[in-house]
Amino acid sequence: MKYIRTLIVDDEPLARQRIALLLQPELDIQVIGECGSGGEALAVIERESPELLFLDVQMPGLDGFGLLAELPPSQLPAVIFVTAFNQHALKAFEVQALDYLLKPFTTARFRETVQRARHRLAASPRDDSLAKAILALAGRSPDGSNYLTRLAVKTPGRILFIKTASITCIESAGNYVAALVGKETHIVRDTINALAEKLDPEKFLRISRSAIVNLDGVKELLPGAQGQHTLVLHNGKQLTMTRGVREVEQALKFS
Image (tube, rainbow, N blue to C red; front, top):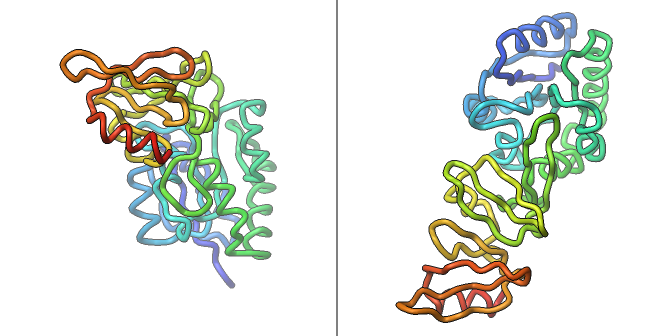
């Protein structure tokens, strides 16, 4: 019998125990471990290469999306998301053809989900379309690059996905950042230092310790006193720049 190596990731011990208990009758499912955090799971996945992952969406620290974003495409397992968000908020999952378990779920629903995963793995254990779908949902480019293509904005009762290309600028707000999209500002649970490393440098430029701009959103560069230049965006917003003006001009020229 070929076993499906499976990892359970959830920050709630009782939730992990229930999934493990429900998997016991599934003779072809081999649970190789349980993890209570995204960071712990990352190490286990890199070491053990599971084929199937039961993944909680919302966890402290490195959450489900963050975990997937850290994995190289070659190590992406089939994913069954486990979440407490309602079905309207889960349309993003359905569009990507990824399965999910909505807490609280029934035993029948669990069996159905496992059977669907079993068939998918048996039919195409290395399905590139599945990997691309997972990468897209996690905000990663399907070409395998580590640059984000979208951000997951968590609000009470839903997760909003915004394309990074639609972001005009990003400003630091302590351990969070404020991303400006049109006339709306979205708070993202990430630091500006961490986010700066995840954005494509050909499209985004950090102009100061507290601001990143989408180069396509820059209208003009205004010189100021004592070298304090100002970037003016197409929406009229002005941002003080501390980065070298020549470096900024070069970036704008080739963006």
